[in-house]
Image (cartoon, rainbow, N blue to C red; front, side):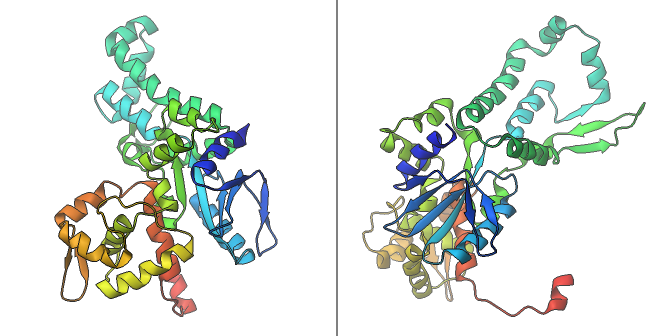
Length: 339
């Protein structure tokens, strides 16, 4: 049952799903996984692993890549829960992002019916409704529940205790940090593609269980910025590379020519109508998204605005992965590691 969702997921990406539960790395370690997808034509292997820590996936990726050198190994991490959404609703309910022991005592001294009447039944239902879809999607996609609980604990660690909780002492919880915390930020920073299932509607999640819904599922993946990780649009990719690096036109085109060989074949354009890679810079300049400086290309204000629309989506992980591949290796002094 757990692979049904992933069958639809991989079909939408033109991968063949492989229902394997472990893969061996160069270290000899057999890594537990949910499943995998293979694109034989483009020599890509995608591993789905539902660990709560993206760093574990980064290590698995390096280990398996060292063992399977003729394929590009890409990692996917499903993220089923985002407590920030629920705590945001709690903040609206309370009218504040902080909660004290006095608030707790105030609630406990009232019966449920009166309490609901005081804070508003509609607001309370809103809090429940923010969590219910996430729970239902967890039930449908059937991830490893241990990993889900670990994810919850990890996110709860972003709650701030303004005063220590001790017997007979006051305490206060600050929700602000957990509300603004992005559960996929570490994935983006490590080149791992997160699947933010907590942003999927129930209908969207159910769509992946229907074998014939390939086009619909593809649109869902594009909507959530997932499809573009596997098939990056040339123009959006160029804009992102310019935003993240210092390239002149020549260097940019040299690097972009290599990207399909790294496991990211180009997809459909989003910002321009270009048909050839070597026209991308001129097209972005013409659209007012890029300017050519004395030494390198740069994003205009409009270009930065375009980037902000996708800056924190799963597709953004591609830039860190490419940076890890493209970056020049340098010798590191052992003493520098302990500074």
